[in-house]
Length: 155
Image (tube, rainbow, N blue to C red; front, top):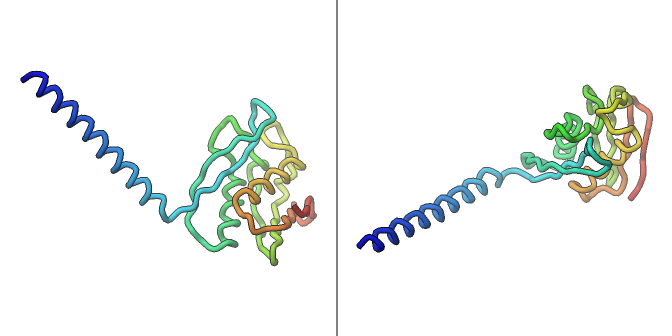
C-alpha cells in the first residue's frame, strides 16, 4: 500500500514537471513569436576576444530594423564585462540603404576614446561584423563620423 502511494506521488510529480515545462516552452514561443533574435558582438575587458549578447527586436522592414539595431548597439552592452563599441553619447545621425550599400552616420562623440571603448578602427570593424552577422543583404557598409567617411569596405 505504501509503495503504491509512493509510486503515485512520483508519477504525479513527474507529470506536473512535464506539464509545467510544456507550458513554459509554449509561453516562451508565443512571447518571442513576433520578435526577431539578433546577436550583438562586443569586445571583452578581460581579453582580446569577441563576446556575444542575444537581443530580441520587433519585426519591421529592413531599413527600420537596421536603424533600430545600430541604435541599440550604440547604447552599449548589457554585460558590464564587455566594452562599448563607441563612447557614451554617440548618436546615429543617419542610416539608409542604396541598393546593397548601407550608409551609417555617427555623431562626433564616436571619436572620443578611453579604456571603456574599443579603438576607432576596431569599432568600425566591429559594427560592420554586427551588421553583416544579422543582415546578410548588404555588400558594402560605409561608416561616417561627424560627416567624414572612416570606412567603406566591400566584403
